[in-house]
Image (cartoon, rainbow, N blue to C red):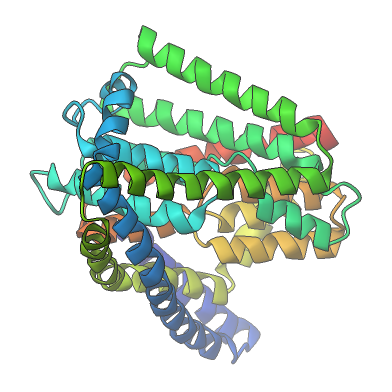
Length: 410
């Protein structure tokens, strides 16, 4: 229901602003620009869906091998103590637990090509447990918020963009990004747990969250001792090695259990095409609404309003020029990336605005895109508190990013 209101608001606000620009400022280009944006974004939505087909086929095939070989069930049993607390509505040792873990691990390593298919597989398994197929369940929402909070250990692409823009030390935003995305994820878990009345004050969850915090601290310490080139080499190599190890491990375990690996892969891969087709309408709906909002000038008007309010309050407004990246990130990953590059180009990669834009880009994920793809893949229309929790996690990431940027670079 919240997504429905947001979608309607995007169109209505865009129409009103475009009408004002036409009537009062004589801007005859605004409505043609909006219509061109709708056509371009519709095409983009289709291309994204078709582009996902091959990756979906590959990774759903690999996951089917893991299922039939029993690896996913082994993961589910190993994670059962923690996941039964965080996802109490998932039956103990259910395969969805292993799929959720695989997705989160891929996200943390920045393996988007693997993370999305694994996430869609997990969402389908959660849908199998869903008594009301058109309504999101509590485990679906918790899983989605874990994705939208965007916990990534090494933001390789952001570091690469900073290097391309001529940053003196491209990796100087690494620790700030990791801290900001960690706070966003932690906030997402806490907020969703409050909505779902899940208690985190128990020995299992405190140990798990404490262990994750210690792991993040160790990674920060380790990578902070590497130079830019070595950091990129280690992160890319370790992620690729781990990914290949998972594929080979699934195959070897399945062979030991006398599973026909090829047939299992083909069976899982068949689902890739149908899943890609199923998400097209949802992607078109979201991307068109975002494109209309941007083309009308609504985004620019929003930014000017924020800057005016901040200046009126007498607060240091240095961060406002980087906010377009933060506001665009929940709506469009490519749009936010463009905003980040524009900020570095305009203000310099080593400026406060340039660095903060990079931290914003890495602190959260594309909430509305993930909502459209994940819920669209299983036909969920009523998202309940998913949008609220996802956006609150995004807000926590934005606030953390601003505070951390002032701490490190202010």
